[in-house]
Length: 341
Image (cartoon, rainbow, N blue to C red):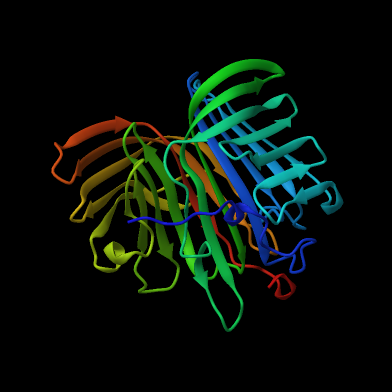
């Protein structure tokens, strides 16, 4: 199973300047698990869905090994932000940026003494949904939602900034890109998203929990290594029921009040690979409540997982991995005002 990826999939896709301020959104996401034990996340947004009114922004989140969280944001007027329609080349007033440099990506983000300048070198092939990146498209309304994973797994090197101090770091990274022109808060209660990477397998998953009574959750799995694409969202393996899930230990988190599975399992069984992934919430590193915006917005958690991954490729011997990775749980909210639709 192979796919053709082009750098243009990682370009700007929505209108800019933004035309439908309360529906259009697009962002480039990078994260890195660093060799000093920290986890670093940056989001470059064209039209940040967690702001009202929405506008361009850069968000930096640093989760230190000792549990300290740094969450920062810098907002920009549209005239101070630029986005290429050829490939990933994102720039905010020449202060913060990310770009496709051919054989690697570079990104810089720095807010109030915290940030990073990092290079990302892909270890497995890039991927996009379908032929154009869209996981959902309605030809009648023009609504669409897209997901492009330019770097499902990457080696990372560069500098981390902590309280204005530079720290040379290496690690393992990920970069994806999303865009949409619709509100998902009326259809989804929440979703789980995350990844588990080892030296010889890459897993990026999603579990979508609908808000519509009686509708069943859906699981999506991108599984690949340097030579093979084993499964991808909406492929024949998903349609045939070869990928299943279990949502376990559903509990209410007391501070924000949302209920979600604190343990879940995903199973993959195809002619080329057998895989079982168990993810447990080890500890939550971010709790973000954003449920009072007229345009909806999203509340979210990030947590460090305690994972057990069992993999058997073709006729190879079964391998078991114990890993610890960054995951997200996102609760989208429906718009509250008619003019936010």
